[in-house]
Amino acid sequence: MQSPKPHRRVRIAVFPVAGLGTRFLPATKTVPKEMLPIVDKPLIQYAVDEAVEAGCDTLVFITNRYKHAVADYFDKAYELEQKLEKAGKAEQLELIRNVLPPGVRAVFVTQAEALGLGHAVLCAKPVVGDQPFAVLLPDDLIWTRQSVAGGAGALKQMADHAERTGGSVIAVQDVPPEQTKSYGIVATEGFDGQAGRITRIVEKPKPEDAPSNLAVVGRYILNPAIFDLLETTQQGAGGEIQLTDAIAQLLPLEQVDAFRFHGTRFDCGTHLGLIEATVRYALDHELLSDAARKLMQNALDEMGVVET
Ligand code: G1P
Image (cartoon, rainbow, N blue to C red; front, side):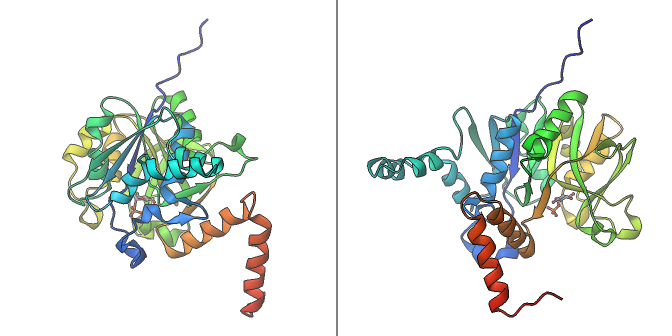
């Protein structure tokens, strides 16, 4: 007997990057928050690498008219390439050429008004059409340990799951009850420790109204049915058109699974999250690890910070 055919593999990734990033002012006055670096790469590059690793070859950036830096970053830098080539700097040349690996294309769509995450995702509809697609929020940086899950990034783990089920998949992690008001929160059935079907999803509930402490992290694999629902989704929490509210409407129509990925997520939309990610990636860096460890220790010693 033939084994059942796998479902369609996700090939398109959508990156909503039109937010103002006001938390990081004054830096974000001219530098979009997605361009803030963690060690040597901007946040957006980490998200792009994760999508490409998962098998995506079309990357859709939802930007606004002030975010030229994101488009410039993914554009070809002819002059710089020529200079590096002349100077024989092959390694650096490789780095800038590979911001988008061969065979991967970038598409830019403008979100004219900041109406919310759901609206940003809807802006991708003309490019995505009738296929499953991923959404990655670059603020959520997910670090994966080489030795766990074969070193696969969070989106790849989710794409493999989606290929098996044919349904939509949403990344989740456990959060302390007092933090439910910062996240989409899900209730599930048949949760086996890693995945389970979502029965309810609520955007930013108070702890007393939260259906669980499983919080949505910024990685989604969605079936295109979400677009029709987004077309009619009204303003929700914070007066914005919420992706969560459209997903809530998808639940009775299709299988939508919560997926607890292997990896550590850093909320780089906050100061501490950005610092924590920098520390982690520095300590994990092939060339910088030892020196980073020493300088952190020195800083603690010099500033008189003692362990209690
Ligand atoms: C968005 C989503 C929320 C999700 C969060 C993850 O919220 O609306 O459901 O839990 O991303 O980072 P935001 O943080 O953009 O307010």
